[in-house]
Length: 318
Image (tube, rainbow, N blue to C red):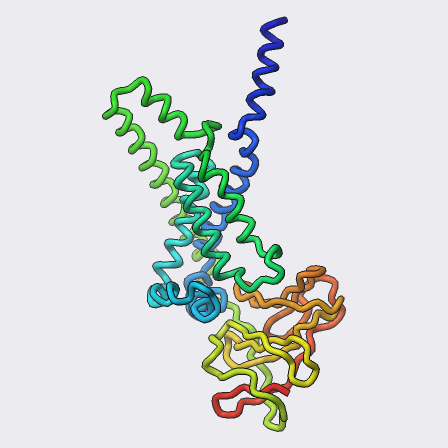
């Protein structure tokens, strides 16, 4: 009876330890980062400069919109290398987190990735708590302090082995385990990239071009043609109504302008470069950034398209 009571008490005590309490979060972060990296590698459009969702286009846009644009400018000439390193880095962080291998280092790298994504991909998300990257950056913080906390952890196993082995043998074992995990991650990444291209091919779907500009538009200059990279957008105030609006430089070429007012409840939509969509933070409607058409959510009508014309290097919106 006493033994059973003690065993039950030990189990309850164990479940209140940090490693066990954080285990669901650790699994979520590990799976999410592993999936994110493999998804990038499997997507033929990720390294295709013709795709608006490619790392080439995204870096080109973030250089002009991110607070770390100057740093991005240094790597802009090497988008393929940057893209592959990001994807493989995410896979390594995810696998290291799941296995509890170099867990603190994986957590620091995961937090760094999330911070970079916060300062680029979701920097202009308003309000800030609608962006996921700031949440991921905070979720990594406990693991930078405690790692896997000895729970279901390769790090903990290696430590126990080190207590019984000579130092040299322990170092060799740690190097062998880390090397096997790295080889497994790279093999998985390579196989995923090959399968993604074999199954999906290299075709890239391109959105329709903008309607021909109307030379009779009498309006206000809102941007220069070289100010907005293809596949990106600029927010401005509609000169006629005073409402927020978006000017999009379409991936296929040309420009389109839309009211930023959601047709469902009147909230201001935001532009998502990765999906080439406008999204409403209030009730989840989302629209095509090429045509303004409703792609999902409760919106009953497309976004209002604004007339525009090109006056030399100026984009004039009516």
